[in-house]
Image 1 (tube, one colour):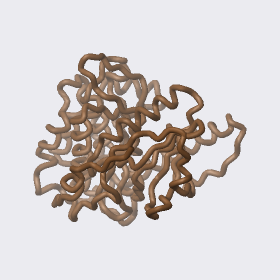
Image 2: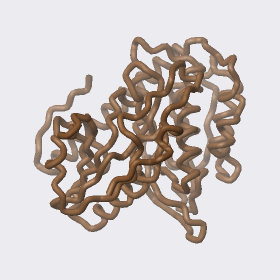
Image 3: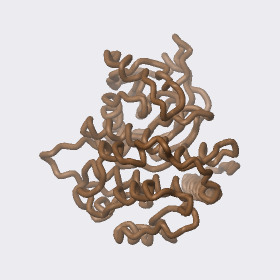
Image 4: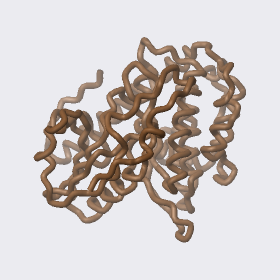
Length: 348
């Protein structure tokens, strides 16, 4: 059953001068979605070309037959019980997250050993891909605009007692290819926080993972805030604060929590911006900024932000993104070879 959220008009249509234009309301009202069992989604939707592949499934363009509405369909193979459990958990979590900074759930089906997650279509591409476009002028002010939106989304997620646990640049998309509005995506690792239960996990992307995860200590909302600190550092400099030559080296760097602003990329970056990063990349999670506190930090609230172009940062960010593309392509080839398949990879 699907129920339209009565709070939709108030949540989905507001103006924020930081973004230079009125936020676009989603293509559909916020919906409460329950998983449909043994219903073929192809009766309602045309599944169109593939858009991309992620950790938990393949994403296709799809179109609702009755309305013509274009959406995204994530198809998750569920041959094992755990795969279905994980997919159902993600649907349950997304169904209660209704905010302009988060990708929205439209429908969900469990059919023939696959879970179909029908989502809002977001076509602007990954945040870092947008930032390195030749027509995009990267300034510290632009970085602050992006980070403010990310913190807005995170504050809302945490207010719903949910921890995202996989915040990284790939999971931040731009709403359009020309605008500055973002959407946080991929809640496959997200967990509900229960104060009566000790929550520990051992997953995530090492480069953006908090020390408490790597130590298998208890996690909390502050675990996401470390990841936001890493994202902000990369966005401001084009460099990753803890990345090493391999995963083990990266893990050791994260656990030590040592990083530096002594790079040429940071020469044009303000002390306020560095202070924002410092207050997130704190090994003791209880001393990190919360999302609500981050939104009140002077770097995100002041109006006279630095509008000098961060040219060195943009050059390094391009290298960072290209390296990520190669790693992703190589991993895809390795995975496909294991399955005895062949594929051509486009790295352009």
